[in-house]
Image (cartoon, rainbow, N blue to C red; front, top):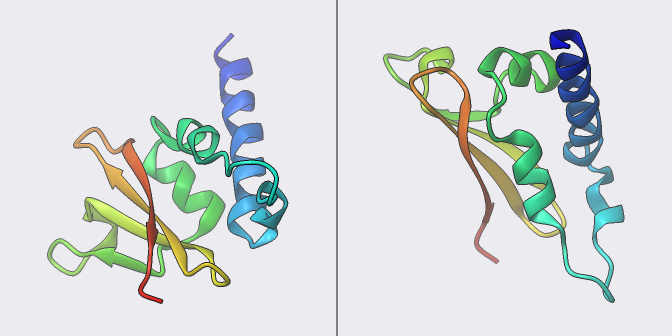
Length: 106
């Protein structure tokens, strides 16, 4: 059963990887609302190591003692067109406790 759960998480993150790689535009449709809640639900609870394995080191982080691995917040670009990024907030248990979609200045 544990293997099935792990495979499910990997599958969910493979989809998330596509979204974060810039193909997330398919989620945007002028007729439908953006489904941020689905992406957020896939991210929350994920171990830091899995995020690192899938997406690599964060391009930006709030560093603790200069070590991004100990940072509580990691930032990944989401859409350059809309100037959005994802902020991942890690708990002390090294799992994503919250994920926020943030927008840069226009």
